[in-house]
Image 1 (cartoon, rainbow, N blue to C red):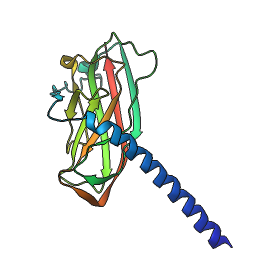
Image 2 (image 1 turned 45 degrees about the vertical axis):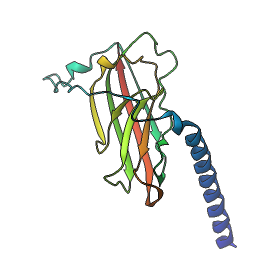
Image 3 (image 1 turned 60 degrees about the vertical axis):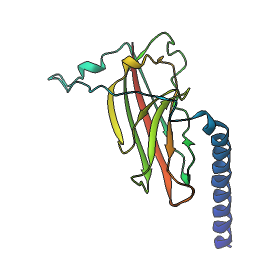
Length: 179
């Protein structure tokens, strides 16, 4: 009897995961046409200053900051852009303030070197190419991005067909400072 309950629980969990994956795929179908890497502006990261003797980072002086964490999607198909969930600025973040610095960290289980990865602001017009760079931070104030703008990771693998083994999405995070 216990074994049947365990199988039933496993079936329910699997069903939820498949349903969630299908919903994410449908969302990506609606949005992937909005992402064209040939039409985006690539934001060039400016190096940050090193830690000073007080332990602070002079380049990260700001009037405000926000962070968010997400779970990135699994990548099961090549030749298609997979959009991660939005990482949102808190309500009340001023739209008149400009992002000064950004730090990010992301991870994929079963990573492969041909994975193309961008960190994009929510309109998908400006992105940072973070392919193979799992975490960094730098000034992007020259990009003139409003502090209340959401961000997301965008993934792609060249080619077509199924990806085997599947690349399993793990945490993706962002920290934004603004003035």
